[in-house]
Structure formats: C-alpha cells, structure tokens
Length: 161
Image (cartoon, rainbow, N blue to C red):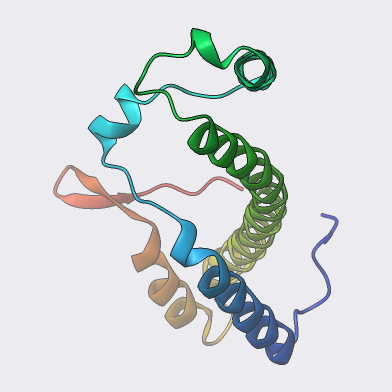
C-alpha cells in the first residue's frame, strides 16, 4: 500500500492560509451577493456564449443608443459585464483551490482509513491467535465496525480493506 500523502501540513501553514483566505473574503465581501435556491434557479447563467452576446450588446448599444429602450442603462451593463468577467477569474482560481483541497483531504482520509483497517485486521488476527492484550484492542476497535442489522441477536461486523 503506497502512502502518497506522506507530508504533514504544518499548523502554522494551515493558520496562515486560513488568515489569508479570511483576508481575501473580507476584501471581496462588500461586492458579493447571496441568492436563495429559488433565486439561483431563476437567474440567467453566463457562459462563454452569453458572454460573447453581452460583449456584442455593449459594443452595439454604444454605437446605436437610439435602439435602446428607455429603461436600458448602458453604464449598468458595463458594470455587470466587468464584474462578471472579474468574478469569473476569481471563481476559477477558487474552484481550483477547492478541488485540490478536496482531493488532498479525500486522499488523506482514504489513507488513514486504509491504515486503520490494516491495524484492525492485524489486531483481529492477533486476537484469534491469542496474543496477549490483542483481544482488548480488537474489542475496542470492533465497536467502530458494528452495523445496525442484528444477525441472530448479535451485531454483525463488516470490514473490507
């Protein structure tokens, strides 16, 4: 079993990273808005095609203002377009960081569980072989693997490595 996640992240690195994330969030927070699930579902989404549409609209509305309805505000459109482009850049970076954090946390968790199962199975075998003290260790760990469906009046255990 190869252990890929084999370098502990120092506590100061975690603390500094958290502080910098909080600083970044505090910096951008005045410009952010929170939508409800219903609002998110009803909101138009900007992808590459709609971005091109909005950019072309800005260009054409600038050169043909007489075609705009009275409620149309080109300045607001420019603000919205600019913010959407800037936020997309930030979101792409944040999503990359989130994915890498999630992947590394998943890998570390996988390796921790795999090591725990290896130790559990070793303690289980040692208990079968009557190694002194092994039964106590096995009994303690066995509690963590009991499943909720009793089999003939007793809890069954389910271990897969």
